[in-house]
Length: 76
Image (cartoon, rainbow, N blue to C red; front, side):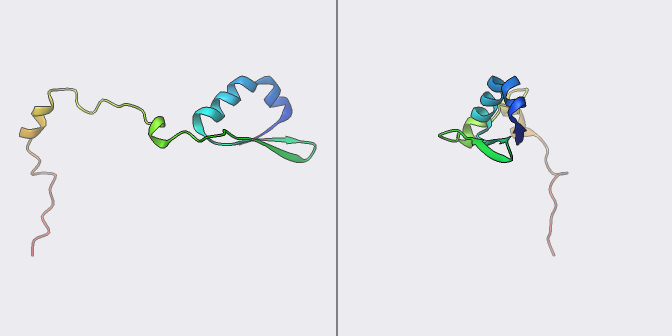
């Protein structure tokens, strides 16, 4: 993302937090030159995962589900 120095000045804390959370560098254009703000260490991909509930019921209930309609048999 490339922004102007004025935009940086107005949103510096939010933009710095965004760089830290995403690991993506921030480019600032100033007098025709580009400056970069980059985190010293990139966060791991695992740290950016969002927990999603995949089962709303008892996990044992999926053991007894009928999946036969989902299967495709490629038998000759």
